[in-house]
Image (cartoon, rainbow, N blue to C red; front, side, top):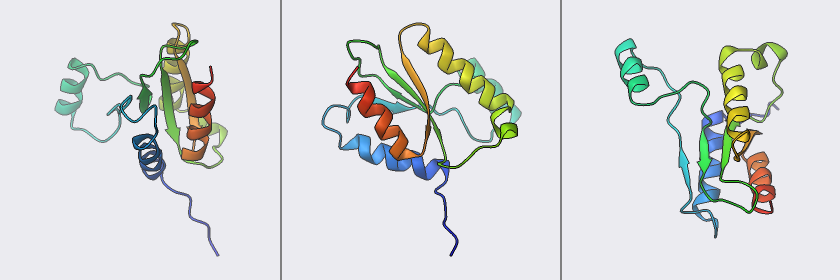
Length: 126
């Protein structure tokens, strides 16, 4: 029997469902619309409106005593090859997370929604 791994979109939906009923966070998160196919014109206009390569998928704007907020880059819960981790997209996502960490935010790659929940729970304790 083949085990089906949820897609990144499905993982993110599961996380958003959990966030939407979370006692503290249900009003303090948003999705960053940074993916998807666009025409050249749409891409150009999106960049003029602030679209940036590498920006994480979810932002939790609930500060803790340590951090201003939490940026989460959602990934499927699977093993990634070195070549998958060396793409320009992946590298720009790593760079974005380092940038936000340097100015007082927390930022992580999440490998599945349950990993994201674990990261968020640890974040709330910081």
